[in-house]
Structures are given as C-alpha cells and as structure tokens.
Length: 94
Image (cartoon, rainbow, N blue to C red):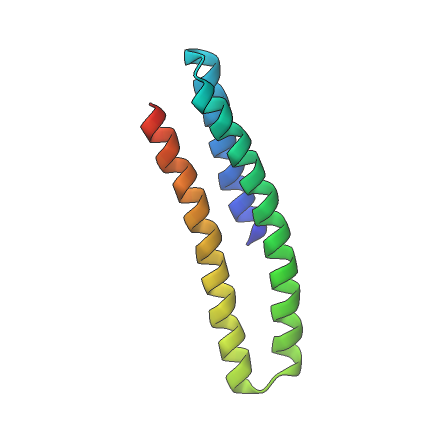
C-alpha cells in the first residue's frame, strides 16, 4: 500500500518540478517539496501501520481482525486524501 501511495506522490512531485521549471513558479517548488514530504510520510506511516495491523490480525479474535482491517483501510484513505490534495494544488497552479 505504501508503495502505491509513494508512486502517486512521486508522480505529483515530478509534475510540480516540471511546472516550476516551465513557469518559474515559486508555489510549484513549494508544492514539489510538499509532495516529496508526503511521499516519505506515506511510506513510513504505511510501514508502521501495516506491521501493527498484521500483528493484531495474527493475535486477535475474529472481531478484532475485522476491526483492524477496517482501520487499515481508513488509514490508507487518509494517505490517499493527502495525495489528492497535492493533485488539487497542482491543478490550481496550472
């Protein structure tokens, strides 16, 4: 999951860098830095959260296993939301 999100983040960072190079927009460079930070955050959060949820799923009751699956999905959606905000910022600059 972290790899998927970091791939999106890398794509946004490349787009922001290209916008900055073409238009010399300071905001695009800030967006580029933000996107790179989001990549690192998405990777780290996904690794730690996945490891924690896997441990819970292995040691927990069936109800808790379902709960951890739902929580993992919610965290993934939060990371995806952050990456979507980057995309919105890119389109605002364009």
